Image: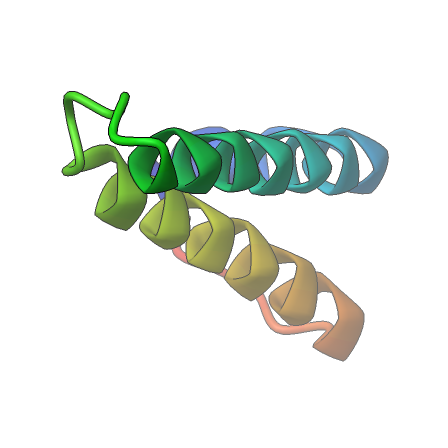
Length: 68
């Protein structure tokens, strides 16, 4: 997910998306622990998406304008 796409969403949508991604990360961790995970590259992708969401939320809280 691109940062530009995230900046178009509302704060509530971003918060909800972060919760969904964290839940997905937990489920993937459980699948890895039980040796059912097939694509472990998803861990990094999910973590990066969560970080992007947190960055956009932090920018909004501080009043910092992101890239236009």
